[in-house]
Length: 288
Image 1 (cartoon, rainbow, N blue to C red):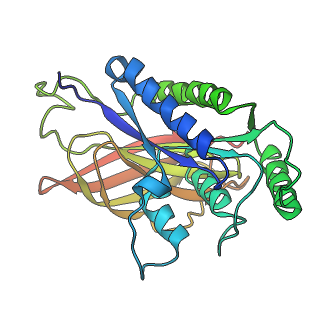
Image 2 (cartoon, rainbow, N blue to C red; image 1 turned 135 degrees about the vertical axis):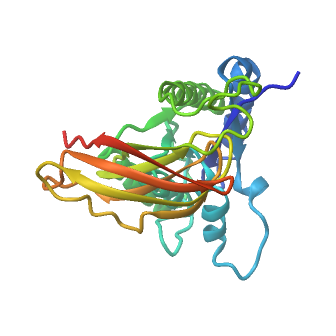
């Protein structure tokens, strides 16, 4: 039986000493799919660098490739640490640390778990110190999880993913109904760009755009105007994107500021099926 479902990519991030934990999380993802993908209309797709990254030379570092192919595609990140933080990269304390921070910056559902077991006697003290320092850094910015065994981690990761799915369904963005329906969501229905605000534990906001239609949106541009007193958000990059695929989203980060307007008017412009479309939406910026 065929059915229509949204795919949410789950990137499994961890250093090299957690192979059992990575397998357990992937098994938990596949178990959730078996139980709920039909009723929820969502499929969770596990992504692992050792299985899904494309071998390629001359396009930056290995971590750059993983970020570009997997982290930037992800909707959710599940990360775990056991006895090591991992090797440093040019942009992070380790590859896994860099992946976590990129997920937070993008406003992804990002879940980090640390082993509650004791460190073995032969573990590298430098790695233990780096791991504990990174854990303290994350604890100051949000909630981290602990696990006693790969099976315990799988159970906790599955619970976190279930909550992510419910939040996604509650957004009300995107219609995955009957494909024969001629209304929104039916075959050939044009791309629909929906803006919304998210924020992350690093203290930044993000103006996100989701394509909730069923066709590719191209040459997407947005214009933002402050409403009432206050300044325009200071976006960190140009407010344009070449294309947004159906069901995908992109984000434009801007720092939290008390001088910012409390509301903004967002005008979106895009092209699909050789036609031009536009929409306008008022969004609230909460500084509490």
